[in-house]
Length: 257
Image (cartoon, rainbow, N blue to C red):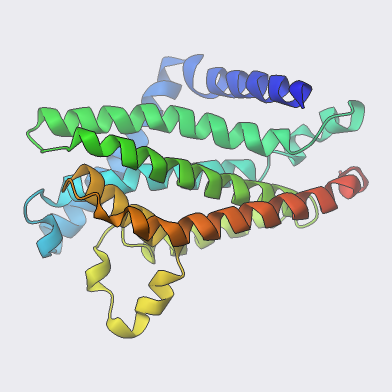
């Protein structure tokens, strides 16, 4: 166990340095890419389509979008990068007796560490531009981000294990994540979903998490902590299933490298 923790720490350090810190452009792109997407979505929906809904009247559309969009970006990148985390380290797994789950775990951790820095920067910028961020809400928001991290970890283990046997998975995952993005109330509030589809919304753990982040950070409403119970249950169940599934597959990984 101690050996795995040490290895994960070293992999996270290497990942952060190689992707973000060894070049100025890597770190800048970490901030610029989500910011560009945020501005594009904000322009399209608030200027071209002039989307209006009561939930964003007091904050404006861009802050309403930013508070949920940045955590989704961390989640999405962590899952999509972890899909190749095992196959990319096939040579190391072949040569060294090592627990292969350390690779997706390290990938998810590094993605969340760096995007958390970006998220804090975005909240500070919003505050500087006069948006009333409820900083006390950062504490319950951290609970949401931890749940989001665990969900990404569960899916990272699942897709990285499956990708050893189904190499097309890395091409299938981006459209699936895009579909998930648009079916989650990030660009719009949950109140805009027609009532006949709300039961599908309830099955999406991301819905409750995104709504909770906005309530905590934008509106200072902490009454929705109870609403996190179902996402926590779904996430923990998925994590347990993913660990079991990954460990059932891992003894056969070397046969498919």
